[in-house]
Image 1 (tube, rainbow, N blue to C red):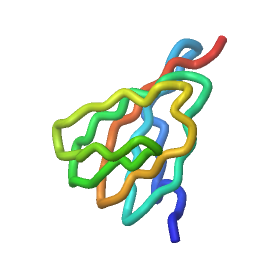
Image 2: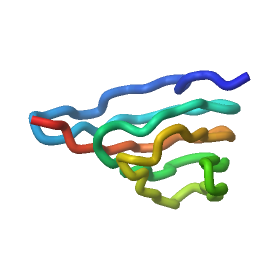
Image 3: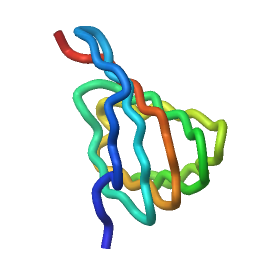
Image 4: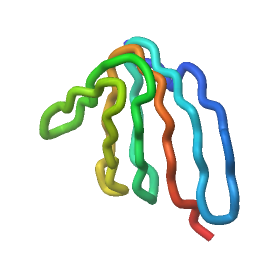
Length: 88
C-alpha cells in the first residue's frame, strides 16, 4: 500500500517559487501539480513509476515532472530537493 510523502519541509517560499525537502520511504503516490516540478535526489535511490514506464533515481540525479503528468509514484528510500513555480 502506498503512502504520502514521509516528511515534507518547506525550505523557502516566495511569491514566485517554493523549494521543499521531501523524504520518501517505501512507496509514495503522487499527482502532478498545475506547474512543473524539478526534483533533485540528494540521498538514497529509488524509482519513478508512471503510466508509460519507469526511471531510476539515484543520488545526484535530477528529473523534471511535467504539469500534465497526472498520477505517478516514487518507490525507494529517497531524500530530494523539490522546486516549483508558484502561480501568482
